[in-house]
Image 1 (tube, rainbow, N blue to C red):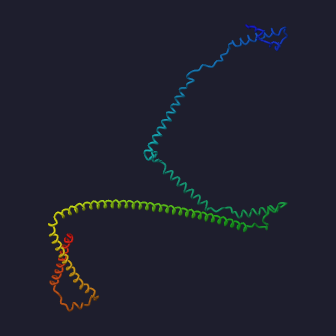
Image 2: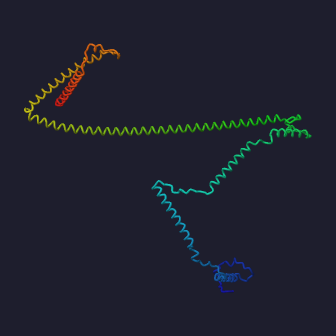
Image 3: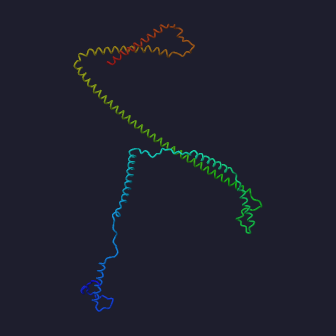
Length: 377
């Protein structure tokens, strides 16, 4: 049986009354104790039993848990990605620093040895195709559609005559014993005319669409030109305004400079005038006599100038009157004034002209003498 111990009766309490043994027994209390002792010994044996099979987890090896090859491959992949990113970043930085020129051009010219031969073959094939197309287009058809249609109609008519129950739908044309070639030809011509009219309509529509597109393009170009002209005018106005502003600023600066210079000159002029006044107060008696003499000389010079001017005006008045009285005389006629006046020799004329020159020189000298007197005043 095994090692087991009976429980005491007080441990069961009143549970023996509810106990129902599987077999007949004299005392329920004793059977209850015995059964409980057997069950406890069984549970003890079960808890202490050892399995004959190895149900433990397998041994864990380090090289299976930590896969170094996989880690190395991942590190290599990340290193390659980081390298590509670094190269890309360097390129982007170069593009930002410079204008970003293209460096992927291939200047190598590909040459083939049989290029000319292949080109000649392609040209020959194209010529043959064009000749074939020309022959096909110029070829007249051997079968006529009009005759076939007429024969088909005749066939339908014969079919209707042969059938026991002819239908109205299968016999559209009355049979008169001869095929209707003329109607078939007329219908063929009508069909061709319709096709030609449709083609003409298509061509007119295409021409209209092309004209509309051309007009739209012209309008767009005109609008673009107008916009460009407006922009140019605006730019010119802006430049003119800028030039005006710069000129105004320059003129203002010049005016300021001139004002400053005038102020400085006035200040400089005020200082010597004050000094002259002081000097005049000190020696009025010494300078009084020469000032009076200078005034008398200037008055005499002015009188002489006025007399000379009056004499010149009197000399010019008769000359102007003679010029006004002169009348246009033809080339062949002789001046009547010249007839009564003897001709002067050349020497006298030269002396007369020299006298006139001397007079003009004297007048110029007198003017030059008058100018210092005026400055002195």
